[in-house]
Image (tube, rainbow, N blue to C red):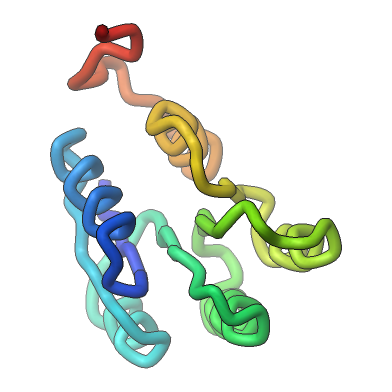
Amino acid sequence: MNLLVTHDDTLFSALIVEFLRFQRYAVSETKTIETTLTALEQRKVDLAICVLPDDPAERLSILAELRHRHPSLPLIALAANSMSDQMQAQIQEYTPHYLARPFAVVSLLGAIADATGIRKTRMSFSATSG
């Protein structure tokens, strides 16, 4: 499965990308809405994961632009958990697949399965390690 992760170049984003690669997803990365839109035109993408920036207006404009240009593209939004209920509701107008940090990585895998309708038969890690 081909994933496109658009992110803000933080350690959190880098960890998400590496985790997805460890799970054997083909992951491409972009850092701006412009490069994201270009990537979506140039290659087959099965799912976009958008690590939302802290600026509320920028969050919504990114999601609005992605939805406008690619209305059927499965999309997962990852955001900080310090948002108001109103902001969370606005994000969910663009995608029902929304995770607030912090979240368990198995939640991300579940969101990928829910967004794409494809469930992996094997995971490359133990959810109960320790």
